[in-house]
Length: 235
Ligand code: APR
Image (cartoon, rainbow, N blue to C red; front, side):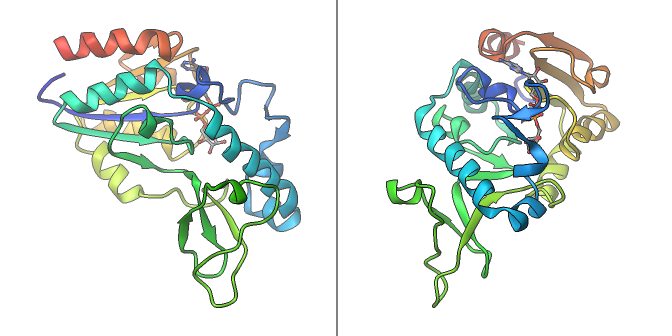
């Protein structure tokens, strides 16, 4: 794999062994909520308190979890492959804490909040930012309420130009821990395949789009990815 252009796309499965729940492994419920009740602009308009409390709990939880060997293995790959792009659907910061230097968060991030008026983002992770009270911005003359800096269902993912351009020019495309249900992320493998890239999947179980991969490795990412990375670096 050395000398090749490598693009990685990660999903909730890579953070599972750190203790962060995935979205679709628990009877369709995410931390006891239906996704549409907490992760849509409509939910935020209809019941901002519920949505806010839900994301504040996710933000507090992020401070309590640690990266696992799968995050660390990808950081190692990044340090040894010259042309390397890491794209994640995850909103946690475990890739960064696991040692990755450059991470594209296509579905937003938990540690930042977005002003509802100006749309400016601020990193807001101090203790007073993590209670169940709303957080107000520092950018407006009359401070505005901030919303989670998260891409909800029905909203446009971030950095898509950069993401497509990476996918359209890679030699190897690797997906780790994603169910392949949510587009456009799930369609990236088609982009990579269409230009002849070798496609690899590392996932606990065969996902919806499993057939789209040239190589499939089933198991826990924290257990199998470190070995795979050693093998890829030796190739
Ligand atoms: N190692 C590898 N894969 C795992 C592990 C593990 N330890 N544990 C679970 N998985 C797999 C599951 O089998 C599942 O296929 O990870 C996948 C997680 O799928 P989802 O929960 O659907 O997560 P993801 O694909 O990231 O969801 C995409 O949906 O709700 C939205 O915006 C949210 O970014 C999220 C998007």
